[in-house]
Structures are given as structure tokens and as C-alpha cells.
Image 1 (cartoon, rainbow, N blue to C red):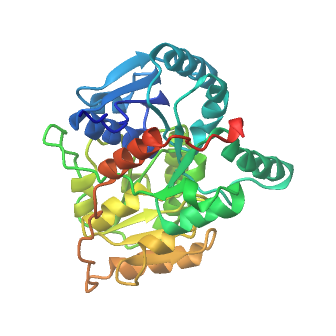
Image 2: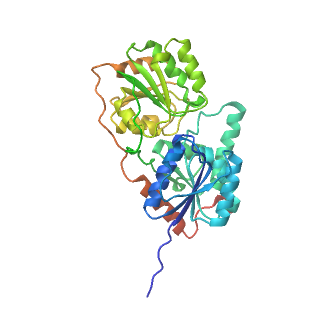
Image 3: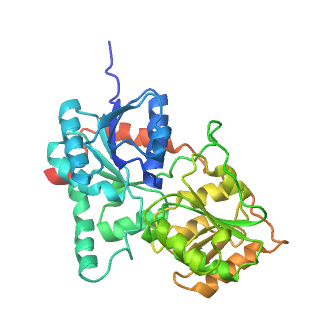
Amino acid sequence: MTHPLPARAGHILSFAQTLKGGGVERALLRLAGEWAARGRRVTLVIGDTTGPLAGELPAGVEVLDGGGGGYLSMARAVVGAVRAMRPDVIFCPGNHYTGAAALLRPFADAPIVAKLSNALAGTHHGAIGLGYRGWLRLHPVFVDHLVAMTPASAGEARALMRVPADRISIIANPPARRRADAAPLALPAGRFILGVGRLAPQKRWERLVAAMLSMPADVSLLILGEGPERAAIEAQAAALGIADRVHLPGHAADPLPVMAAATVVALTSDHEGVPGVMREALGEGTPVVSTDSSVAIPELIDSPEKGTIVPRGDAAALVAALTRWLSPDVVRPPPTPVAGDPAGDYLTLFDDLVSSARPHRGARR
């Protein structure tokens, strides 16, 4: 007597708008590479395949043209790919992409799994905030399952999106790994504060640049990343007379050696999800100073030995925290790498959804 093989998510399809940088896209490429290495067929629809992350496209992953860098053109390409290829699972890699998932729902027979990559509260205010809260509550209609990266993030999803607990899993991002092929980055002489992330308004790098005025003269600031705020950051540093101490080398293929060499890593954002930068820094044994930009921040900086959390907009608190970690007698935290097997946990979830006789489909209730 033969027994049918258990259902399996043999083909996973995901998508991204560009490869110009960003933690969401970088995490997606890591996951895609690990899924492909474990024998799954992985298809990525990419709107614009140019940019710094193009060199991180993993082997064994099929990449389809997403029609340029526009969001709607990417969404149309995803719909076409889903209709033509009929994947077993569709993975939405972050909050920015759930609009495409909503457009995709009428054409998709496969379960849609969406990862929460950014904070749900505090990102919009006034009339826009009211509309955004309504949008969040629509997500259970077109997303079958949510993945949060920490318990607090999952709680935020239950409260604001009204997603039942049995439709939320907690899976961390896969850890970054050292890259032997990455060109080494020239580091500032002496002590330096490190920021890692897109040069975008959300990150509020101007707070960190302003704090440099209160730092000792031998301390430099290095920010890895690229984005639309480069000119504003450079102008601010010049106006403050510290242009020679503020370095913007652009995207780094492997930021881990720089994190290990930094005196302290700083995040000054208005809002974040679960910053991979923080996990990577702590994995290297480097302390972190962060604004209270997410419910997940206290889960990462869960003891004063790992770093300091400061209120957003409190310039004095930011200066005091940085000064503390710049002290020559400070004790760096022990490395705390990401535990478990995130890529494998995703595959277990995908297989469970595919094997369910009746996967939750909000649109079909």
C-alpha cells in the first residue's frame, strides 16, 4: 500500500520593488538563498534589479523582471507571475509590500504569508493615521498568515490588525554572515560611532550628526547606507564644522566587520520594526544606543549591559547615552547571535499552510 507524500511548499514566490538597499530586501535575499539551498524552488519578481544589493542575489533563485522600479508595475508583474506559475506559497517580505498582496489576492490560490517589517503604531498621525489604522484592519482579509519577528511585534499585530493569534507566527530574520568576497571598508582612525541604514527621513540621522558636537574631538561618525538624505546630512555636517568627522561611504556589502570595530552602534529613527542592525551589532558584541522607535527595541536591548534606549527627540539623552558607551573603561557586551533556524522555521510554516485542507482565507469567508 502506498501513502501519498505530505503536501510541501515546493515553489515559493516573493517580490521586491528595487535592490537599491534596505533591510527588508536584504533579509528577503538571505531567506531566498537559504530556501533554494534546501531544495525549494524560489522565484523573485524584482522591479529594478540594479543597485547595491544586486551583488547579493543568491544562486539557485529565479529572478523575473518586475517592470522597472515602480510599485504598480511590480505588482502587475507579480500578478502575472502568480497566474502563470501557480506557486505553492506567496511571501510578502514587509509592510511596504502588503498593498501588492491586496491587489494579488483575487488571482492567488496559494496562501499569502506577510512579514511585519516595520512598526504599526506611531508611523502616521491625524487623518492619515486614521486611514492607516483602517488599512491595517483590512489585512486579515487578504493575508492568510502573518510573521512577526518578536513577541511584542506579534502583540501589536493582534491589537491593531485584529489578526487572531493562530494566524501569527514569531520568526526572527536570518542572521547576516561574513562575506569573504566583500571589499574591506576604510575605517576612521580611532573611536567611531556607527549608523547603518538607508539615508532616509525615517532614520533621522540629523539627530546623530547634531550629537557629534558634544562628542570628544577624536570620535568620528560613520553611516553606512545610501538614500535621498545624503545631501542634507553632508550640508548639516558642514554647517556644524564637523564635515571631517562625518563619513558617508555608501552601501557596504558586509557591514559586520565594521560593526565589530565600532565603539557603539546608534539608531535614531522615529519608527522601526525589529531592526536587523541591532541584532547584528549585538551579535558582534557591540553595544547599541537606540531611540524608543518600536515595541521590539526593549526585547533586543533587554539589559543595560547591551545598550541604552533613549526617547525620540531627546537630544540630551542621546548625548548622555553615547558618552557613556564611549567611556574607555566601559565593558562591551558578550556577543548574542540569533538563535535557532529562521529559514527552516519559515519552511515549516509554509509546509503546514500548504498541507492544511482548509487554509485560512479571509477573502473567502
